[in-house]
Structure formats: structure tokens, C-alpha cells
Image (cartoon, rainbow, N blue to C red):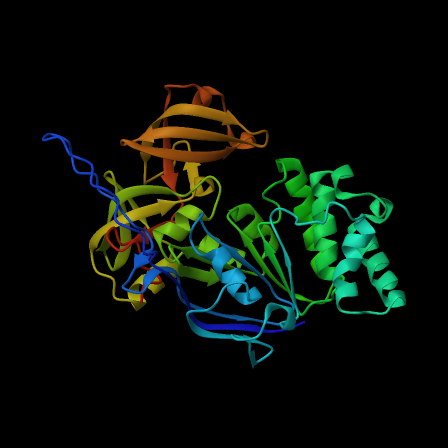
Length: 401
């Protein structure tokens, strides 16, 4: 039970002072290899996390999400005290903890690889952090039994970790964290070692767990499905920087840039080249000759920012594209792949040289002609769900500063 505040947090890893490698003799016609660095490199070193700001409320479930190497685990480790903060301030319950040792921060951490003691039973693993704190045995027994009951591992208390499945081991790792009754519970990709079915089960277990224990959660994952289902708010990171913070619905419906738009949502958002222009005082998007008038709320947001006629990247989620002959805004593509998913069909099209995915509910299919590979289908984009991005900066023009 705690608030956590990160103010202008920065983590820089100093450049390693390695001897320069010997230069390989280059052949005359051999092209020069270009190396690109996504993270900032300064005179001080590599900037792994840059200007991270976040206020976490008491008992809130925050998810840090992003691709590998974006800085989310580094941020979590700085909260835990396992990584030194280069610059910025970290507060837990309004107390500055930059220089407070990990054991004195009243936090617990669940790791990706479980980190259980193989020579101890489940009960002994759960008891261990409490014995270190010299908690009375009667209280230890009470806390361990309660945690085992919450997580459904009572029957495994006398077993050793090697006799448990991956999901059971992860429950034990979570149990060992919650018996301490920490102010903040940190979880670093705890489900990544599990198969798809177990991952779904454990997601549901974590949702139930957070309702039964009074603590603040900070959860790290690269899986946007986990982020959307678990988080009260999601922090989306890329290359060490925060891209957007919001509820799952906010980041899905109102992505601030093309990165967020492409990262959140499965399948990913479709992108088309287009133009934004005003016709009769209304904003219209033109894509491949088809004109679509935007919805009223989008009109207001664009007008409030005085957006002028310009080239744009037009984004539309697969579920916001309508198949069949609809008046106006008609586009077309050739079916390359058709995936039957049960309640819906995922159509992969080649539309004007771009990949495009449409999700079509099976109940909406009038015939199976649209499922045939090589067939041409017509579609339109929902006016209330189109996003217009600056093609150079990637910013959503409805929300751009």
C-alpha cells in the first residue's frame, strides 16, 4: 500500500573503455557497413532510460510495456534499488529513496525465472523472506498458509520446485513475494516462460490476486495483451523514452503516435498514405482517390489545433474496416491470406502495394467469395475510428502538442 513517484528519472550506462578492435582490411568495392543506434549515446554513455515521469497511486496496477531493450526492466530495477539512478528522484510514500538500500524500501520482486531455492520445499521458500526478518513462527505459519490458499498451492507446500510445473513454480514465486506484505510488488515479465494456455490462466490468477491483496503493482511485459488485460494504466516505452501513459482504452482509441498505434492492438493497425483537407468547412481524408469525411468529435479536435491541409499517414484498425459495397470511401484490395478464427475471419490483403488486414465477423459474411485467395474485395474505413498522423514526426494530429 503505497504511492510511487518517479521524477525525471534517467539511467546512463557509462561507455566501456575497451581497446579499439583491429580494423579489418576493406576490399575496394566492399560497401561500408552502417550501424544504427536506437538508444541515445552521449559523452557520459548509453542513455537506457531518459526523463521518465510517473505518479502511481496507492493500490494502482501499472504496466510498463514496450519492445525488448526499451528500458522497462531497467526502470523496474531502479524502483527496486537494484540499479543506481543516474539522475532524477524516486519517492515511495513521499519519501525520497534514491539512496535507500533495496531491503529497506519495503518492496518485493517477482522475476522472470522464478528464482526459487531448489533445495527447499515450497513452504520453506515461502517462509524464507519472513525468517530473514525474524518474524515470529506463528505469524509466519499464518501468512504462508494464507498466501498458499490465495494462490491455490496448499497441496504443494511439502514439494520441492523440481516437482512442480512452470505455472505452479510461478505461483510459488508470487507467494514468496506477497507473504512479506510489501508496499510495492514488482513483477518483471513473470509469465514469459509459460506456454500460451498457462499464460492465460496465470493472467486470470494475477487479476484475482490484486483484488485480494492491498498493494501497489508495477508490472513489466513486452506482451501488449498482458498490458491491456492487467493494467489500470499502461506506460508505453520505446528507446528509453515514455511514448504514452493512459488506460488500456485510452491508448487503444487515442494513440499519440504511429509507434503506439502499431504496438497496441492485435493485429496491428493498418497504415495508408493519404491527404487531409477541408471541404465545405469539414475535414476529409483522401486515400487512393476515396474521400471519407471524419466524425464530428475528430472534426472538433483537428479544428481546435488549426490543422491545415497536409499529407498524412492514415491509420485504421482491422476491426474498424468494413467489407462489402458501402456508399462513399470505397477502397479495394486482393486477398492474399484468409485466416478462419472461428467468430471472425482475418483477411490479409494487398491494397495499393501495402499489407492490409481486415477482421470480418463470420456472421457478416454474405458468402464465402471474399475468403478465396486472389479475389478482389472492396472496403471502407470507419469515419469515427480513422487516425491521421504526421508522416514525418509520426504524431497523431488530433493530439499533437
